[in-house]
Length: 101
Image (cartoon, rainbow, N blue to C red; front, side):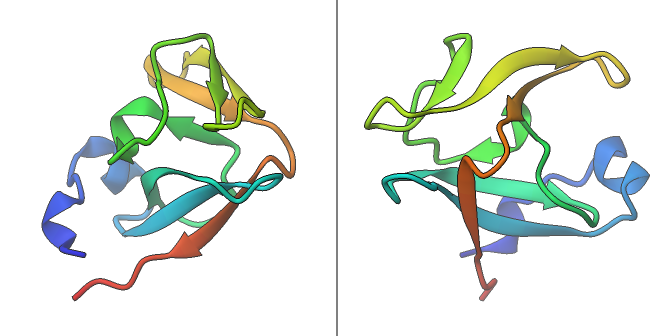
């Protein structure tokens, strides 16, 4: 996986200036959801739509659902940054770090 797909913008800089790529999976059925750029430390409480890469599911609906229709989160506007995101439910997803080449 190339690190050239990592966005380097004001949001990354505001969160400590480092990013990592994560593969996101449904906790219930282990279906892959997307590749996600996580900026800064901490757990994933929300997933920004502009950070979702190679999405395997639709992001146009009001809920984030896996291919087997398990609801993983709900869409909202993160007002602090005026960004479209999904609020992720507790224990709805698992993640796996993607090694850069």
